[in-house]
Image 1 (cartoon, helix red, strand yellow):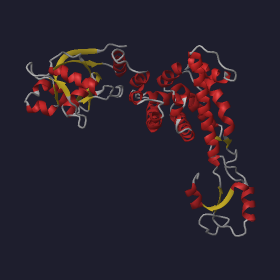
Image 2 (cartoon, rainbow, N blue to C red; image 1 turned 90 degrees about the vertical axis):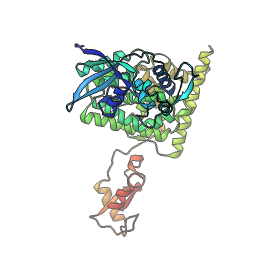
Image 3 (cartoon, one colour; image 1 turned 90 degrees about the horizontal axis):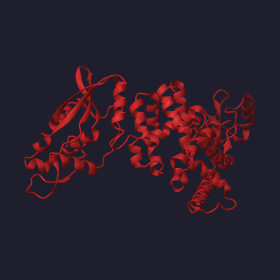
Image 4 (cartoon, helix red, strand yellow; image 1 turned 180 degrees about the vertical axis):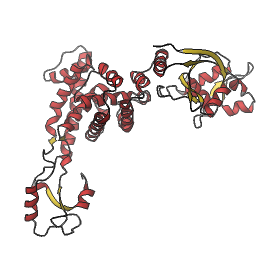
Length: 430
C-alpha cells in the first residue's frame, strides 16, 4: 500500500445535510456495502446524539469531480443514513426514538417533527462529528475500506469482493444476474433477506458463473479472487458464462420451483445441483414431460429426507442402517471440506446418478434436411399452414417441430408440420 494522506476536523450535522442535499456527499461509492443497520441501531444513535455522547470518527474519501469536491463515505454510512432518515432528508424512512430532551423529563417517544415543535432541533443539527478526510490512490482507498470494516460488524466475503472488484465487468454481470433470481433464492430459503442485503446471492452467482466458464465445479476459496483480480473472464467468454448460468438457473427453477422443502435450499447443496443443470444444458438434456418432472421432484425430496435421516442417526451416535450407505456417502461431502472441489464433484456425480435418466437428449440435428423437406412436401396433397390454413408454395413454406426441438422434440417427419413463416415465428418453442 502506498502512502495515504489524511487530516482531522469536525463537521456539524447541518454541514452533512447540506453536503448531501447538494450532492457532494456520496453514501454509496462502488466499494461501499448495503445498509445493514436495523431500526433499533438507528434509534440508539439518535438517542446518543441527544445525550451529547461522542461518536466514532467518520472517514471520507476526498476527491474532485467536474470541478466540485465530493466526499465518498468510507466508514460511517449507517450513522449518516440514520441522521438523514430521522430528520426527513431521506424521504420515506422516518422513524421514532425513545429519549428525553431534558433532565427533568421522562423518556418519551420522539420524532423529528416533535423536536422541531419544541424548537430543539439544534440539539441534533448543531451536533459536531469528528471527520477524517483521506486522499490517495483509488486502490488504496478500497483497501482502507476493507481494513476499517473488518472490525465491528465484519464484511462478508461477498462485500470484500465488491469493495475490491466493483469495477470488474464480471462482478457487474454477476450482480445483474443475481438480482434477476433474488426472489427465487429468497423464497426458497437459499439466501435469507439479511444475506441478500449483504450480497450473498451475488457471491453464489459469481461461483456459478465461474463454473459455467470452467465447465466444472471449482474450489470456492481459490476461484473468485483469482478470476476477478485478473479479470480473466471478459468479452465473449463473459457473455457465454452469463448465458449458461442464466439458462441453467431457469431450468432448475422450472423443474424444482419449491426447493425450500428439501435440504437443497442450503447453498452448498444448491450449488452442486445448479452446476449439474448447467452441464445438462450443455449436453442437450432437457426435462419437459410433466410426469417425469414430478418424478424428479419426488426423487429429490426422498433423497433429501434420506440424507437428513442419516444425519440425525449420526448426531445420535447411531449406526447407519442397511441401504442407507448411499445417503451417508452424500452426507460426508457436506460435513468435511464442503466447498473443496473434490467434495463438490462427488455431490454432483451422486445427483447426476439420481436424475440423468429422467432427462431427454435434444436431437443432434436442429434443422430438417433438404431430403426431409422434399418428402414432407410431396406427401402433402394440398400444402396449407396448420395454423392459418393459408395455401403454401415451395418458396414460402417452413417445417415446424410439433414438440419443440428445445424441449426434446426430434427432427424427424413424425414430429413435423407445414407452417407459414409468420406462424412458425409466433409459435416459438410452444
